[in-house]
Image (cartoon, rainbow, N blue to C red; front, side):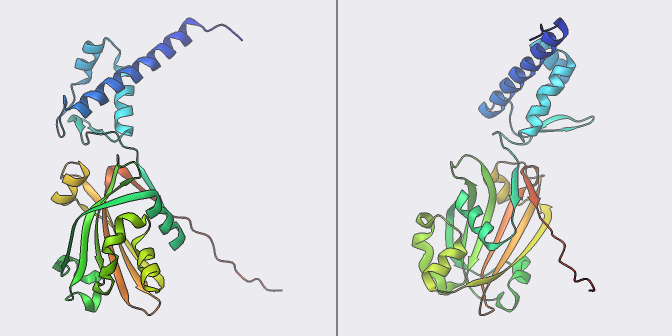
Length: 257
């Protein structure tokens, strides 16, 4: 093995240093030393405090950006947008079976369950059933450890299936699958709509993000084999912590013989 040159040693030392600095800044954010919505100290101030170069400061801040803790805007400084370290939630789905796996790999805790009419702004998702009463639930979906909020979810279920309420927390899989198991029906079709819109006050609070952030809203309409709408779910994901992957394959074309 060749000897490490002074330049290589300096580079490695600088690399270790920005990891140390970023970890200190992350800890301060999580402990509330720097509060949500506030600006971090400037690059110059961080250089002076930690006795490091501006390059090292920028690399440390880059780690905070990748962790979803801060955002940087030229001329505006570095703003804190979350108080806990998050990784982007990558959402990949091609079939109902993958939707089932997604629900099994995450956990949702409902803190409100009641019967209600859909709000007027949601009516279009319910078609001719917009004026009917539905079983309504809302809560936060997290990873299985319960540490990372993924999305704020509202669910409307046909009141014929109210009997599943007591089994929701213990079933541990997709709600549509629980309805299928309990009531012996089949969900044959899921219509999905994705759009970006300002995050609601309720969702921002639940997900620990600034209210000025945008949400990626995913609406799913579950239709039974009889063609009846049985469930509507509306999930708001913080735009800074969400990505969606879709796989498309060209359909086979018949050639001439």
